[in-house]
Length: 343
Image (cartoon, rainbow, N blue to C red; front, side):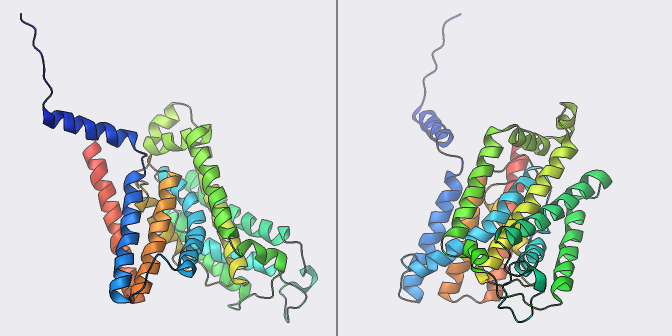
C-alpha cells in the first residue's frame, strides 16, 4: 500500500484557525461583544434622536451601574439556582420583605411613629443582619419545600413570591418606613452598592469555579441522577443553593432600602424577572449545568443599557416591557436551540 499524504486546503486551514481562535478566547467574549454593540447602537441613536451622547453622560452611566448592582446581586443567586435546573420567582418579593424588616429596625428617634419605639437608634449591623437573615430564611424554606416535598421549584418559589409580598404588606400595613439611621443608609450611598455587587460576584465566581460546592452544583445541573449515584448529597446542596439565593435577595433588599432611605412593600416588583433575564442573557442554560457569574454580570449590564437607552431615546415604558419580554424569549430560544444542537 502506498502512503497517502493529506494536504490541508486553504479552506480547512482557515476553518482550523477560527476554531482554535474561538477556543482561545474567553467564554464570555461573544456576550461582551453584544454588550458593546448595544452601547454603540444607543450612542448613535442618541446623536440621531436627541443630538447628544448616550455614553458620555456621567450621571446616566452612574445610574445604570447602580441599577445593575441591585439586580446583579439577586442574579448571582438566581444563576446558581438555574445551573441546578431550578428557578426562583420569589426574589423580588423577598426584597420587599427584607427591605421593610431592615428599615423597621433602622429607624431613628426622629421618626414620628416608629414601628418599634423601644428599638430605635440600633447599630447598623442589626437591621442589616435582620434583613439578610429574613432572606436566608425564605430561601431555606424554598429549598426544603423543593427537596422534602417534591414540589417543582416553579410552584414552590411562586408560593413564596405571593407569601413574601403579602407578609411585607401586612408588616407595614401599606405604609412606608422612613427616618432611617445614617449608619444604615451609608451602605446604599455612593459606590457602595457597586462594591457590594462586585464582591458578591467575585466570591461566587471563585466558589463555582474552584470549590467542591461549585463542582457539585454543576454536576447536579448536568445530570441529577448521575450526581446521586456518584455519592453527592443532592438535596443538601439544593437547599444550600436556594438558601444562598434567598440570602442574596435579602442583601439586595437591605441595599435598596438603604439607597432610597425607606422601606416599602412595593419594592422589588418584577426584579426576579430581570435577574432571570440577566442570567439567561449571560449564557446560563435553563436546561441546567451551564452558567457563569461573569456572563451574568455582563447580562445585567446589558439589561441596564437597554432600559436606560430606551428611556434616553424616548421609548414608552410599556413598549420597553414588550421589548424586554421579546429579548428574554429570544435568549431562551437560543439556549434551547444550542442544547438541541449539542444533543
